[in-house]
Every structure is written in C-alpha cells, then in structure tokens.
Amino acid sequence: MSRNVSASMRKGAPVFAALGDVTRLRLLTKLSSGGPLSIAQLTDGEDVTRQAITKHLAVLADAGLVRDSWRGRERLWELELAPLDEARICLDLVSRRWDERLARLKALVEDDPTP
Amino acid sequence: MSRNVSASMRKGAPVFAALGDVTRLRLLTKLSSGGPLSIAQLTDGEDVTRQAITKHLAVLADAGLVRDSWRGRERLWELELAPLDEARICLDLVSRRWDERLARLKALVEDDPTP
DNA sequence: CTCATACGCAACCTCCTGGTTGCCTATCTA
DNA sequence: TAGATAGGCAACCAGGAGGTTGCGTATGAG
Image (tube, rainbow over all chains, first blue to last red; front, side, top):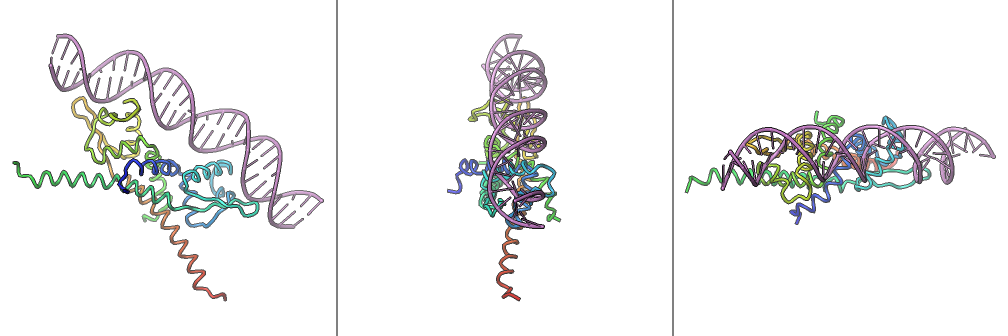
C-alpha cells in the first residue's frame, strides 16, 4: 500500500485542481501564517469581491484544504494540512517512478556487457 | 530567496492547474515509468479520443511538465521533473509557515507565565 | 434603538475546458 | 504503389469556473 497509484491520483487530483489558482493559493498562504481569518479579512487586499472569495473558499473546503467555524457574525476559516500531504505523496509517487526507471535503464546499460 | 512566497505561487499555480485532472495525472504516471511514449500509446487504455489526449498533452507541455520530440511520423512525449519540484516547494512553503505559526503560538503560551 | 458590519443566496454573464467529429497530410509497410 | 497508421487542424458544443450585482438577514457597536 501507499503504492496504489490510481488511488493516490484520485485523491490528489481534486487537491491540485483547488491549488491551481493564484487567488486560492494566496488565501492559503494568508491562512498558513494568519490564524483563523474571517471572510472580510481574507478579502482585504485581494482585488476581487467578497463573493468571489467566498466561492474560492468553498472550492478549498471541498478539497478539504480549509475548515470553517462561526464566531458571532463572523465565519472563520482555518487551514487543514492533510490534503497538502496527500498532494505531496502524489508528486513523490511520480518522481520516484521516474527515478526508478532511470536506475533500471542505467543498470541495463552498465551491468550487461552484451551476452 | 526561495522564501519569496508570491513568486513561488506564481510558478506553482499553473503546474497545480495542469495536475488537477485525473486523465492528465494518469498520463504523467504512464510517462514516469514508460519511457518516451507516442500519442497513440498514451491514448491506449484511456476512454477518450486521441484528440482529447493531444489537448491534455498540450496543457502539460504549457506547464513544462512534458517535452516532445518527433521520430518519423510519431510524436514522442517525455516527462520533465523540474516543475514537479517547483510544486513541491510551493507546498512546503505553506506547510512550513503553518508549522512556524504553531511553534510561535506554543512559545507564547509556554514561555509567558503572565507578566 | 439605530446603523454599520459580516455574511448568505440567487441570478446573471463571459470565457475557458474538456470533449467530440470531420477532414487532411505525412510516413511506414505489404 | 496502395493501404494502413500517426498525427495535425478547425469547427463545434455543453458545461463549469470565476466573477459581478442586487437584495435580504443576523450580529455587533454607538
């Protein structure tokens, strides 16, 4: 296990899709160092509407990358690291297979002085 | 350097976007262990048209994730690892900031027996 | 109590994405 | 040389993504 490529991909793809937008990445970095932040706080500095930010947060939440909670009239958002690790695993999977293939090729060339 | 968050994000976002599709991820894993492969070979086993695969490859190429070369009438595609590393850096950046923040909070609580 | 603030919901718009089909060209092979 | 194979190009389509505006409702502050 952990070698199940197709499962790792199915987990990774939605996360990557969520990460594939500059605005959303910016939101994540804000959250990574900024504690739980309200939508208004997250919108601040961005050049799109609060509604747009809300939608982006929904996308991130669908991918499991953020979690929300209410405090009074504020909706606070917090980072969730687990999916990021999942994504990293997915990247490593591809990189490792590539390295293994290179090693295999190298072995073929070196270890075989023609039969 | 390497601490420039916004630059890392601008590099990472297009890569993530390219990775955010199961078909494309599958293509990458095929390429990661399968040497340079032709479009026909990459289409084989997939449940979409050759044209669709061609478009996916174009997206991957735009993100720098694959490279192509011609051999006769075949167009061969090969994996390119560099952008994957870029993506990993981007993930690490977020994770690290999060960890640093946690450490900061912990220090605040522990090191401060109320003034 | 009143008003500003923080947010949700819904409608709407435009543009991109993923996919298809049809047709045409180049190359390999029998 | 004829036919199969590998691929490009262009048109087309449905649906989703990202964004906006307008309006309504809680909650907090003065």
